[in-house]
Image (cartoon, rainbow, N blue to C red):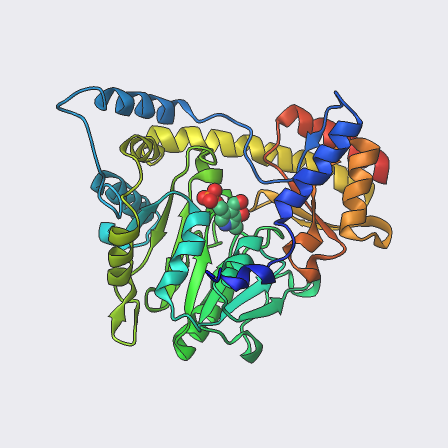
Amino acid sequence: MTRPNMHYADLQESYLFRRIAQRTATYEQAHPGVHLYRMGIGDVSLPLCDAVICALHEAVDDQANAKRFHGYMPECGASFLREAIAAHYASRGVSVDADEVFVSSGASDELGDILDLFDAGSSAMVIEPAYPAYVDANIMAGRPIVHVPACEEEGFLPRPSEAARADVLYLCSPNNPTGAVFNKAQLQEWVDFANQCGAVILFDAAYEAYIEDDELPHSIFEVAGARTCAIEICSLSKTAGFTGTRLGYTVIPKELVRCGLSLNGMWVRNRTTKTNGVSYIIQRGAAAVFTPEGQRQVREGIAVYKRNAQVLMRALDEAGIWYCGGRNAPYLWLRCPDGMGSWEFFDSLLHQIQVVGTPGEGFGSCGEGYFRLSTFGDPRDTVEAARRIEDLLA
Ligand code: PLP
């Protein structure tokens, strides 16, 4: 009999967002026609900006023209997009070569696929609460996981320690779900730690575009020594509304070498075997994000979500609820009131005020007692959700 990958049996019963969807669907079935205020899953509510839409239309027309038609694209990404992304890094003072940039279909795909680069027995360190895909991808691959709990007292930004020793170190900044952001000195400690023990940092920068404070690093490559120990995984999902359009990019420096093998070279080999590239049309849409006009327009969208953050923060302040995040990140991480458990609080918001959030426990056991609100909702819904939260909790 064919033996399936038995590691799947070690996964929790259902992925966090599916569980939320199931509970929400049950509520909707019992209360037909009721409007829900969705502040849970981190999906965006604004459409793509004009610069992207125009580029997508032009690219569709190219595909109808024999002279401009594109078939298979280069597996690691079109040079026009890799160069645009490298130039974007350069505009922030970070030097990255175009052939160190790999275009992907999104950060989620990449966070799982990239594990191919590491030995089957490699361990992974995950700081929790964490984006659930880090843990689940490693469980599926049967890899040992070193869980590092982050606590409120250290601002959910633990420092490296012997307890964090692993082959692959996941760092997410700005953090999902806590909204915490590493400053340069804190990131430097992790880079020094990784270089000293030979580990590789997987730096998830999916939310870098939400950083407002000038001194905070958008990229791990702003920190000295990162080119010999880090891979950066980025996404246009939250930067430019590509959650349904799908495009991400990964930077693997050429200096990143382990046991004589270049991880950049290995990834080229991997991509040329396991993908046939991202569609020409989508890459053209993505390239428009990196033009001056595209940057201006995507910043307008981000500003809308930042106003949502302000609205929710004001409501929590009024209600006297402790929270962090919201300023340099699109999530607010709050302490559930009256010592409530996070699923208990989820049910109470859903049933009493029809607001859907995300229970902190879904991001790891140390998230119990906390709750995440997303700022990606429709602005009018966010205003109403904030009013209801304030009324309920004040
Ligand atoms: N990384 C983090 C921390 C996320 O929160 C998400 C999505 O919510 C992703 C990666 C996945 O992004 P993408 O849509 O590019 O797959």
